Amino acid sequence: MDRYYVYGVNFKDNGKIYNFKSKIRCPINVTVITETEKGLQFGKVVSYLGNELNKNIDGLKDIIRIATKRDYEEYLKNLKDADLALKQCRILVKELNLEMKMINASYTFDRKQLIFNFIADERVDFRELARRLAAIYHTRIELRQIGARDKAREVGGVGICGNKICCANFLNHIDSVSMNMAKNQGLALNPSKINGLCGRLLCCLTYEDEEYLRCSENLPSIGETVKTELGEGSVVNVDILHRSYKVLVNNEKVEIVLGDQNGSNK
Image (cartoon, rainbow, N blue to C red; front, side):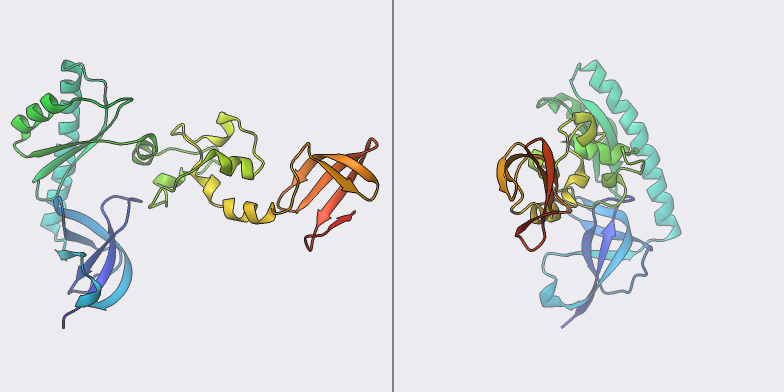
C-alpha cells in the first residue's frame, strides 16, 4: 500500500492553508504545483502533517511537483496578466453600470480559470459582464462575491492595536463574532472601539471569550441588588478577570472578591 506525505499549502501569503498529499518529500517554504478543483495552482508548503497510508488520505488532492524556475516565471506572468484583467473588468463594470466593486483577480496556474472577487451591497446580475470577459480572455470566468471581512483580508491594513490586522496576518479561518462577546468582556458597545477596519466586530473578541465566560460565573451585573455583611447594596463595578465587584452600601463602596466561589468582604 502506498504511503504519502501530507503537507499544508497556501496560495498567497497568510491565506487559508489546504492539505495535500505527495509521494515526494517537500521542504517547508518550497513552492509547488498542486492539483485543485479549479485546476493547477502555484503554492507554497507551509507545514508538514506527517506520512499516512493511502486509506487515511481520501479526498486529498496531489502535489504534482516542486516548482521549477520556469514555473515561477509563469506564475509571475499570471500575476501581471491578472492585474491587467482586473483593470479591464473595472472598465466593463462602469460601462455596464453595475453596482459592484472589483477587489482582485487571479489566474489558476494553468490559466484554465480567471477568478474575480468583488463586493456589493446586493446581488448583482453579472451575466453580461461574464460573457464579455470570456470573449476577451478565452477562459472560464468566475465572479465571486465576498464579504467585508474577506475584503479586509485581501486589502490588509493596521488595526486599532497598532499591528497588522489579524485576518491578513495569521488567521487562516475567520470565526463567527457576536455582540454577546463584547458584552461578556464588559466592553463599551461603541462601534469605533469594537469594530475593525472591515466595519464588522473585531476578530480578536473571540480570543478570550471563553476565559471571560469562565471568570464571570456567579458574578452579578452592574445595577443588581445584592446582600453583603453590611447590608443590601447596588453593584456599581465588576472586575471580571479578578472575579470581584464593588457594592454601594449606605454611600460606602464595599469590594467583594469571589475566590472559591464564595463571596468575602475585602
